[in-house]
Image (cartoon, rainbow, N blue to C red):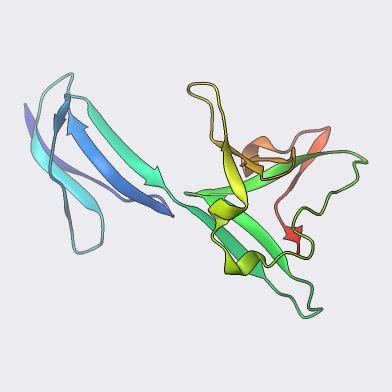
Length: 148
């Protein structure tokens, strides 16, 4: 047995929902730096399970030219559309009052295979948004901002 502490923080736009050691719920406290901490005597084979609930957010940008843009995040992930080279870009939010409604009015969860990363569809379209890191390749590029 070794007695020591571990620390972790919540990812951006996420809330801690549970923490378990070897299947048993544990209470956590935050230290003065804002980190959750667990201090205990550890044994070989101990397992920690930490679960977070991610929050869907919209981000509005209005540059100097007055064109307005919206982007979305889910927890710590920026969401992006995978764009094929030469594709015509749809404007699903054109003429809509995006800031006045929560992001759940614009995006719906897209059914994913078990263990797959979360994806969202822009309601009324076939446009899928997935974590940014998955949207780019040698043949595609990511699109994160949409005009409205």
